[in-house]
Image (cartoon, rainbow, N blue to C red; front, side, top):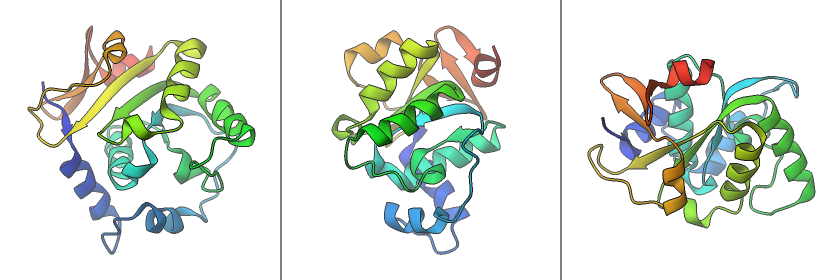
Length: 178
């Protein structure tokens, strides 16, 4: 099995934006007029570092093409200020997590600097205990060296053209459904 690469998800994002926008501000402006129902449910809450906006947008597209509905905060709730930790933002994020079946914890080099990811992981694990880790690496064959506690959760990897969990070996689609 292999990891998804940063380059492939960035390329996916660029293929969906008409001008190949790279900044999170440009991506955010592109989607700020989307109207998303506050009661919508999702298969996946995508926990990520805001600095990885382009790669995360590409990962969102990849997961949606695989048949999943995916919540990304700055896409659906562009009014949130993810740069600051506030009670108001936490209320919205909690409500969104309650409307998601699973959480995928997308790890990159920027993850350790995220103000929200560990809080999201802890809250969701306590809420639903349905968490998986997806490492985005430079090379699909790279080994992943993250924080030790992440080894408590299954990792999402690519096997052929599909996504699977490594432990236990199960398709992402089956895991989300159960």
